Amino acid sequence: MSAVIDPRTEAETSRFFTFVEGDTQLRVHYNDVGDGDETVVMLHGSGPGASGWANFNRNIDAFADAGYRVLLLDCLGWGKSDSIVCTGSRSDLNARVLKGLLDTLGIERAHLLGNSMGGHSAVAFALANPARVGKLVLMGGGTGGPSQFVPMPTEGIKLLQALYREPTIENLKKMLNVFVYDPSTLTEELMQARLQNMLARRDHLDNFVKSSAANPKQFPDYGHRLNEIKAPALVIWGRDDRFVPMDVGLRLVWGLPNADFHIFGRCGHWAQWEHAAAFNRMAVEFLAD
Ligand SMILES: O=C(O)/C=C/C(=O)/C=C/C=C(\O)C(=O)O
Image (cartoon, rainbow, N blue to C red; front, side, top):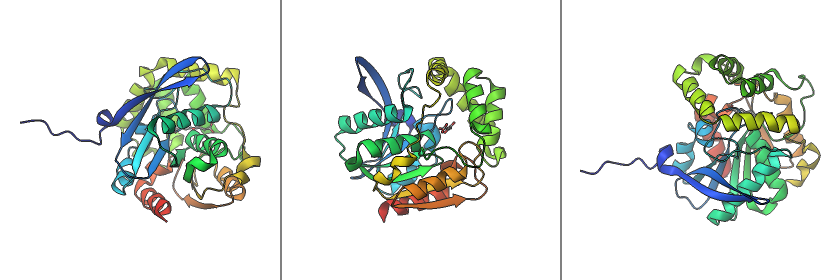
């Protein structure tokens, strides 16, 4: 009797493509789930050990069940993609990699769903490739500039940077403690998985530190260009976000001409995970509208 294969596991959906940056060929990893006519690309954040699958494991099924092809891109320097030292704009590098993925797969237009750095990457892509964006869902990111109320870098970003420099379980727990509103929801299993992801790729950690030293402004402020983005956008934030404060989301909805804003109470930096069921309903309905 042959084994039953679950087509929605990480292993079954794991793929690679080659991306060329200057003279360098780089291997980029992504997961390809579902087979709808419309595509949603999910873009992860910049935390150590983040990846498409790690950041969106509570969302993939909802979008695939709603009839979308779901692509989870591991940016260069995260997950199973090659590592890189980024001395320019990380948001724009990620946007070029995303274009490479869509070109490789022959996808003309996609919806983009980005968390934190993923939101920054989605905005950079929309500015460079307006005709290729369907709708945008931006959670806790989007390069709307600095907070007007909270000193930057925020406590969460400082803990993230410390974790990159010293990747220990103690520092991971310190970061995760302020990452979500209710840290008791983070299981020991989740934290150990994160730790393994981080430690499996020391090159990613080292290169992030080198990149930040070479250029502390990895995510430039595109606040002044947001009005160029005509794509409908749903901006979603956690009221209690201690990484990228909620007023940055307000700046996004002031700048993006076709944006709506939803704020989750009792929610930190991981809206799509902390409020997965409500998030999935809202984002799927927004894309279908
Ligand atoms: O510095 C910024 O603006 C962005 C920070 C992030 O992208 C942090 C994200 C953290 C995660 O998504 C994670 O899973 O650790």
